[in-house]
Length: 108
Image 1 (cartoon, rainbow, N blue to C red):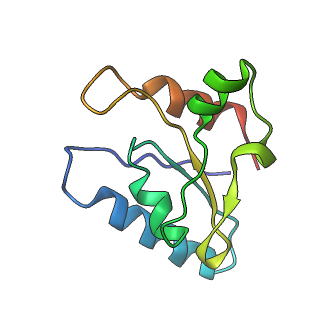
Image 2 (spheres, rainbow, N blue to C red; image 1 turned 120 degrees about the horizontal axis):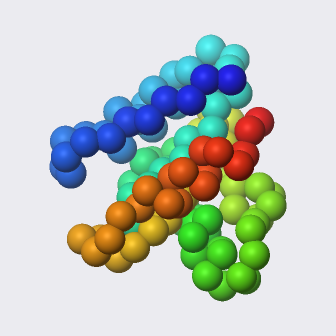
């Protein structure tokens, strides 16, 4: 299994590039999971035709327990599995905990 992280300054096209890369790699026959970390869910909404999904952090706040993948994962364009890490309100705090939790604890 390979894991890639794409990050950088806001507004430079990370979500657009990431969702396009995920779709392209999935169309080559690979199983792909995209874990979005934007509070607006930009990258996964590209793959889900605008459909929202419950983030890992929101699920944990609501249910006070770790979710099963079926609780928070949705399959999108080209079969890409989509998960949103979630995190703080935009501009407040750091989303690192949601990303770390999402990448470490789930392996496909």
